[in-house]
Length: 151
Length: 151
DNA sequence: TATTGTTATACTCTATAACTATA
DNA sequence: TATAGTTATAGAGTATAACAATA
Image (tube, rainbow over all chains, first blue to last red; front, side, top):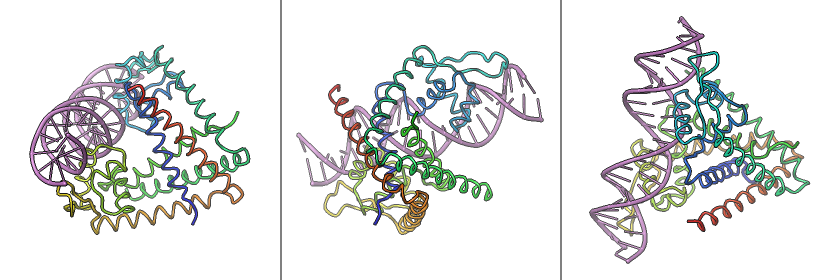
């Protein structure tokens, strides 16, 4: 019997989540809040609408996350220059520093994982994981269409 | 520049979560509840204490999950034969059927993913993912010990 | 005295629906 | 009329602390 891809991926998922929880313990940061911070770090100031779409959660949800991050000084709401309905959410200096550190740590872990894979397995790993991701995406789209059809 | 392992693993994590959410929509099942059902399906009747440790959440949390699953007819609480403080949580017939279907679907997806990987990449993929998992585990243990030292 | 599970309380993530201000 | 964001309300996961029954 072959080993199980799904189970290993799920195990890695769990490891990640526990790791993040441990890393953020004692701070006001959570996985969701950090997800939002990553968007700002990578894409610059955004409207909440844009964040809502990027993170696939409701606008209401973004309000709550931004409220919390603003309260703790990681982000700031500034008026949108051309649309008075909208706000731009941007990183504060503190938020920027936090994200810089997070990016460093991200790179460190990346290097660790990369180094853990024997050179002769690197290509198989990369191609394999890309194939798995592509297939998962296809399955997800198919399931979504079926769901929409039923609704 | 090389592609990023971490980001791809995180993307797969997201795909999984969205998939599960879609699959459970319209039922009282959620990721956490299904996690508990898997434990019962794989390990048979368990005390809530055992489930708490297996799932790495508090006993209080298990109470809530079991309450919900019991209310909807997936599991049943029966007296522990030798310890009157404890209960055994076990699958009902309904729960058993649900888990049988879930196992089938699990196997189908597993086959899909396996087939998506070109034969010449299979070994590299497996070895690579095991190496990544092992390294992540090491990093997690190390972080945990540091955390305990600080506390 | 230690363990099992519960009640009490609180925080977070998430969603839908109704509403305000602005396009 | 449509869009951006908020208030209102609700369900779910999670945690800590205090407590009852039993070991």
